[in-house]
Every structure is written in structure tokens, then in C-alpha cells.
Image (cartoon, rainbow, N blue to C red):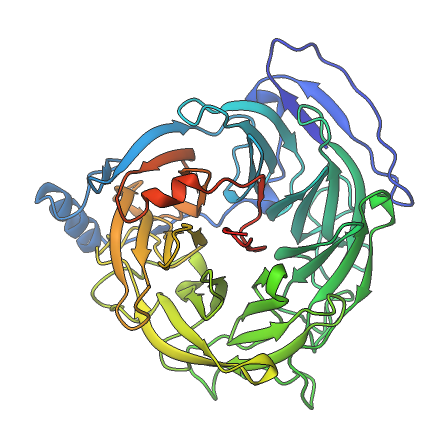
Amino acid sequence: MILLKESRTRRRRLGVAAAAAGLLAALLTAGPAVATPDPGDGPVAGKGVSKSTEAEVKAAIADGEIPGQDEIVHSDNIEHLVNIPKDALPGTNSDLAFQGRYAFSGNYDGFRIFDISNPKAPRTVAQVLCPGSQNDISVSGNLLFLSTDSSRSDSSCSSTTQPATEKSSWEGMKVFDISDKTNPKYVAAVETACGSHTHTLVPERRNVYLYVSSYSPSATYPDCQPPHDGISVIKVPRNAPEKAAVVDFPVLFPGEGPDGGGNPGAPTNPGVSKTTGCHDITVLPDKDLAAGACMGDGILFSIKDPENPKVIDRVQDNVNFAFWHSATFNQKANKVVFTDELGGGGAATCNAEIGPNRGADGIYDIVGKGDKRKLVFRSYFKIPRHQADVEVCVAHNGSLIPVKGKDIMVQAWYQGGVSVWDFTNSSNPKEIGYFERGPVTTERLTTAGSWSAYYYNGYIYSNDIAKGFDVLKLSDRRTDPAKKVRLGELNVQTQPDYFD
């Protein structure tokens, strides 16, 4: 692990012991040139487009149909307060977490901690170099958790890429002590089957449980064998995080045969991902409820026993959903918004050709009680602004904006930007605000834009894949009541009871 702090601080080194893992942490004080992230975890290079597509994009910019290259546009009710460009960590920006006056920004090369006590001028507190995609991030008390979903030579922060076909390769969860935000310490590593694409916290007083989502097994991977039809559950003792360990692997899609019982995908369901695990899970701890976005399936399950989650209902959409990506409950827990990551976050899907129902959100009402609850589809939502064919755009990570009696959320759409929308009427959702940038380039299809856009203590924070950390201010009578809601901690996939 490399900690990159402001250049005024002198250079030093120190070691950190992690039981059984032999982890080493090094603290460096230097500028961006010191960081040497592993290129094996970088994003896929942009794809070239035809001359005719390039000409069409340039014409659309000239005609004012779409914003100009890197031009910022937004609705009247959103103000762009500040952008903090990438610094020592040049990789893809990923997820966000919050605690008190701090924001924690995941990046394929590690993570960055911001002091956001003044949202108009966030200040970098620490930058930690620890390569391993996608570095999905969350915090609880003095602990920070980081997902590694790329095959590494070992569990250290100085590891290099290594084929998953090698038994010695490592993927899984990393645990840091952040009691000193300026000096995070790497304290534990837990290997999990097929790594950790994302993870979700189920916090308790003495322990933190992690639901680890991962997928895409192969018979050639020693530590990621099919069927992989469940999730890893890790138990982390708060007072002894070095004892973190996998305590169970509950099967969510039981079935006969080598592939388990999830959605079979193509050719049975053309264009739909085969279910070989979950991509993301959102929990409502106060209601012992969770929703899983699991590739070809959406599920609702009980977490009364956090080590043994129980599936209540399961749905598929083999017409318009290609890849069930994430889930968001409303405050009353009688609705779930599932997102479809059509194209895997690497395609231009916000255009007339794809249409309004694919690469979109699916809104489901939860009807019934207890273990007889069912997910009932109501409608789709997609941003109403077409993007250029050089812009990767798809439904991605978002959070509720806590307004009593209303169901409103803010959501990232990659180069579609940030959208604020109201789904109080499940059958008639409407956008009420937006922020976006124009194409990064007119010459090739590029992955960029907002990965995560979350509402926290009166402001919207967006982690832009390419441009850095953005802070937005939303001023609207429909959402202004949310400014009164203050949280001490927010991991969006661990949804709080905002009004408790």
C-alpha cells in the first residue's frame, strides 16, 4: 500500500502487521509522479468509430443537439459547485462512501479521502495506492473495506496482475483501519471465490458482515469454479479485524447441473446474461430485507439471520434487461428500482436505436407480507436526453434523496451524467433535474462520466470515471426538505432509515 499525502509532508516508511497475511504498508509523501499503478487493472481502451459516426457527432454538437466536447450543461435547479481532478491515482474512479465530514472515493488504483466539511472546496486528506479493480469501497466505524475483482500475484498493495488460472493468484476483500484518516493502515485480507466485484455491509455492534458479490466462474480457474450461484459472507470482528474470515457461502440459485439454477442466458434467453452470481446487493438492515441484482435475475431476500440470507422472491425480464446491475429500495420498502447495465458499461445505449426501455431502470412494487412478498413490475425509467454514439451511457449507481412521502433518487448514467428523478408514481416516473458533460472525444467510443452519484447531507457527490470528484447543489422545492436529514455515515448499498 502506498499512501500519497500532500508534498509539504516529509517522506517516511512504516510497517503494518496483519495477522497471517504478512501485509506491508508503506507511506510516501509525494506528487502524482510517484504513483505507479499496475496497468493490468486499467479500463479498456476506447473503440474507434466510423468516419460517418464521427461526422454525425460533430454535426450534432454544431447544431446544439448535444453539448460540446467536455462542455457542462445542467438543469436550472442544479448548480455545479466544484470539480476536483484526479491527482496521484490516475485510474478509473469508482464508488463512493461517506462518514462524518469525509468522502471516500474508490479508484482502480486505490482510494482517496476528501474532507468535505466545506462542500465548495473539498480537501484531499489521503491518497492510497492499492491497485485492484474495481476497488468498490465502504466504511463502518474505524474500518474501510475495499473489493478486489482482478487476479493479483498476492494480497498486498504492491501486487501485480497474474492469470486467474494460477492457483497462487489472489482476489477478495481488503480491510483498512481508518481511525486516523490521514494514515489508513492495511490490517486484513480475505480471499473469496471469484474475487469481490462489489460488497455490501450488514453492520452489527460487535461485527460487520460483508456480502461479497462476484461472478463469471470458469473450470480453468482453481479458485472460481462453477457453479457459482451464491455469495460469500465475511464476518469482521470490529475489535479484531485481522480475524476477518468467510463464514458461509449461501446458495441463492439452487439447481441441478454444473450451472446452478439461475437465468440460463443465451441461447434460451438471447441477449440476457447467464446468472453465475450477483453483481450487487442492497440491504435494509432495519427491516431485515435485501434486494439482489444478479446478472440475469432480480431477487428479494430476508437477512434476519445475516449469515444465512433467505430468498423470498425472484424475477426476470428477458425482453428488456440484459444485466441486472444494482438495486435501490424506497424509504417505505414497498418498491425496488433495479438497473440494467446493458453493454456492461462499455456501450452507447442512450440513443434512439436502443430506445427507452433497455439499458434503463426497472421499477418494481413489493406487494404482500413476510415471506409471501412479491416483486411486481410497474414501469421503466431512462434519461430523456439522447447521448452521442461516442458516449458510453447506461443506468448506474444512485441513491435516495430523503423526502418524506416522496420517492426521489439521484443516479449516475456514465456519460449520460447525473439524473434526479421521481418515482413516487411507480407507473409514471419523471426526471426533475440533470447534470452532464459533453463527449470526451468525437473520434472514439469512450468510457467516462459519472460512476456513482449520491445524496449526502444536503449535496450530491459524483465520482466521474475520467474527470474526478464533482459536488453539485440541488435547489428544488420538491427536494429541499431532504436538506434537514443529516447522517453520520452512508454506504448507499446499506440503506439507512433516513427518518428514524
